[in-house]
Every structure is written in C-alpha cells, then in structure tokens.
Image (tube, rainbow, N blue to C red; front, side, top):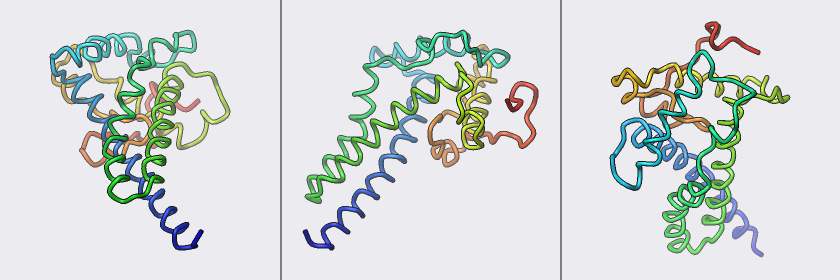
Amino acid sequence: MSPWIVFGNIIFALVAFVYAMVANSFLEWFVHGEIMHRGWGNRWTNYLEANHPAHHRDFPPHNSKNPNHSWRKVHLPLWAFPLTVSLTVLPASFISYLSSHGIFLWTVLITSSVYYWVYQYMHTRDHVPRKRWFENRESFIFLDIFHAIHHTFDENDQEQWRNPVNLCIVFPLADFLMGTAVIPPKYFSPYFKRR
C-alpha cells in the first residue's frame, strides 16, 4: 500500500474523529436541553421529557452524589444507544460514500459508540461515586463539578428549567459555543468541595 494512501486514511480518520466528537457534543446538548428540559410534547420525546424531571428530583443539589443510589436511575435507556449513534453515523456514511473512504464511516461509528458508553459511565460516576482512582484527576473533577452545577437549577422554577446550563457531560464544547456553560469556580462552594 502506498504511503500516500496510508497518510490519506490517517487524515480521514482524524477528520472523522473530530467530526464525531463535535457532532456528539451538539447532539448531547440538543437532546438534553431542547427535548429533556424545554420539551417538544410529541410521542417520540415524551419518555425523555417525563423522566428527566424525576432524575433531577432523585439527584437534587444537596444530594446529587450518593453511592447508595441505583445506576438505573442515571442511565439512558438501552434503545437510546442505536438511535444516538445512528444520528452521527448517517451523515458519515454519506461522506464516506462520496469520498470512497470507508475509514471515515468506521471511525465515526467507533467514536460515537465509545462516546455513548463513556457518557453512561461518566454520568453514573457523577451521581453514584465509587472512589475510583481517576475520580481525583483534574479533568474528571472539572466535568463532575460542571455537571453538578447543572443540578443546582430547580425544576419548579420554569425559567431556570427551560434555560438550563452545563448540558454536556463528556465533551462540553457545545455548551461553550452555545453560551450555556457555567465554569466551575477555582474554589468550590460547600456543595462542590473537592474529595
């Protein structure tokens, strides 16, 4: 195989990885903010709209972390996996077809699948901590507090509920670009003190 073909495949894989990370960040932002908080009121989104307020009640600001909580209260349903992955893979399959580079499609498929499972794992870790070694790393502490700030908003305050902040858990690029990011302070309040 020519070194130029290998180089081209590496470039396509890198572009696909960036596309998948950005697309998944915006997908996470859109589903969480537009559907789960603002609501669309149709039969396709009713499940998410109905269950998300319960999640906020189960994990209020003063008790958003509890090792005794069940992970089942945190995870998205299993049917969300093929749905969310397909939303990023369908455009990628078109790009892959037009460019004749299958590596693009496979990279997006793998990246989006891993993104989904990392989301499930990190969201569980945010609410059901187990004192794992990485829970004390700066990047995880930042993302943990970033999500905890999201839970400080009260579902009974319709203005706050309809205009949530810190919607992304894995890669908050969309929060920063869409103006919904609230950056954790360097020295945290008692709710968010370091472990």
